[in-house]
Image (cartoon, rainbow, N blue to C red; front, side, top):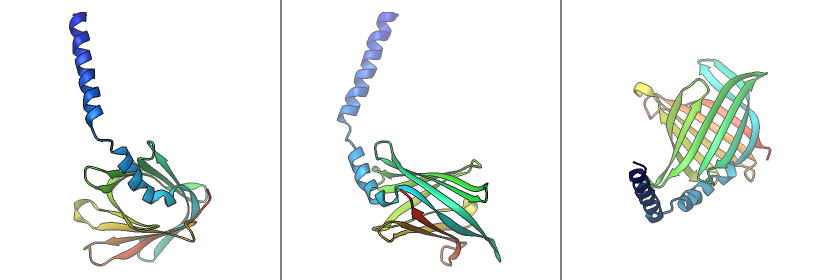
Amino acid sequence: MKKLITPLLAACLLGFVSANAQAPDFSAQCKERLQKLEALAGKWKGSGTVTMGPGRTETFNQTEDVQFRLDGTILQIEGVGKRGDDVVFNALAVINYDVMKGDYAMKSYLRDGRSTDAWFKVVEDNAFSWGYSLPNNSGQIRYMITLKEAGKVWTEIGEFSSDGTNWNKMFEMNLNKEL
């Protein structure tokens, strides 16, 4: 039995190595595309507001920790919003460039267990948009991130639409780059 497993294992390993040796190296293309997001990398701190319903706006203090991971092939963003010592918002997002689709992709996770697949676009230098559709066709959310003052100020506006045509501002965040 030992003699049968050894040649079988060797054949599998040879096939794996051979297939990977012939596969194109997509990492260079991923890194190149993600470099367009380089200005987002760093530690950010500031404040924001969120509209919770008619006439009900709440403020919070926000930090964003943005780092390249996996040898520069993904960008990880962790945001923490606090009111006093209470964490009112905590999310983690991962952005990558999907070479097979030829587009960016974003996956976000909330601390309560929810997650979403979002689209992500580079609008122009230092301007990015992202968003997603809500479940059951109940609306859409979109955000616009703009970096100003030589990439030292991050402004993000979030909007909601129930019909994809009329948009209402529901979120604003203003951060300063610390590192």
